Image (tube, helix red, strand yellow):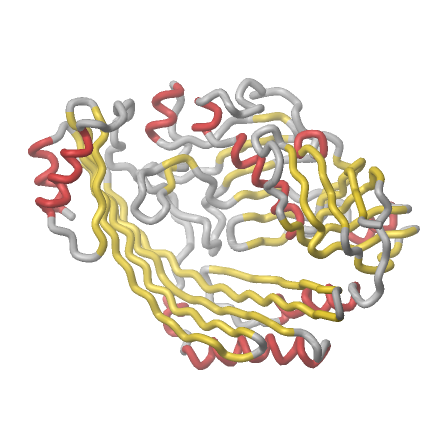
Length: 433
């Protein structure tokens, strides 16, 4: 990397070299049986330069030819975007625990055993179920050098377990699922199988949803369907382009006072955390919503410079791509209401566990609609059964403007979102007759 940077500095005003190395082992099960064992290793190197005030960019997989990489970046700079930013110099990074060497030492046979145990537990409960399961472990190593003296080098470990199942009875298809992830090794399969067994128990009875406005409790899994419009709106690039409905709302009460949202890459042992972003900017917690008031947006170096702002440390790369603003670990602050209290408060309503196709509609405007892949009917404060052939639709901003209650027990989803249950009022529900 030093050689690439040195060559680039001879032909450009500024340069940055970014390297990403990953090693991952996966164990996959299909139809209740072991299907695949696989280990993958990959390394990519990316060079970003500023030449004649414009950005040049080139990437290589595996061993990179330094001169060829520099030549390719120079060639693209002629047509590149005007560079508005300066690479950051050397600076200290916050300490964040994201690497556990024990992850790499977990034997594959133990991963197979964990997967087998998950499936056996669920099949024992529901013999007709067909399960897909997966376990993965691995490490990610990030290295960065730039011509301003900035440098970064860190290693992250990750371990994940997931389980999905479906039960088919005639034309009725039931889907259940759960996952868990950490930077530590995982061995408590009950954190995955427990919620799945609960879903199966609640789904034993069938219920009919009416077509009208109803209160809805979104479980943590269900909340993920509401996040897509919000992430687009809080992206600094969307704001810069004038497409975000929140662009001019900083300080305004757009959301319910019970709603607080933060992007926090400093949470220990979460796969979305990191000491710095993919441009060498130190990580920090960025408030997005505080008690209903919009606080700000997510920026990388280039977007921030174009907007007259500072980077929030959210420059993220998909592999070796150019950086762009992106969230790390999103945290919705918990409230004080237990899930059971929410259910008891509802005379007639729904629990939404999983939505399918929720990205339909005017995403930037906050509109969403989707089929309830897994949901349950509430009647007189009791969960009475699973609903099918049901859709929910609404606008995220209207829904989150009037929240009846925020749950007291947050859950991590995929290592990238921590959220409690959200009890929302007046959501449009339609059901097939």
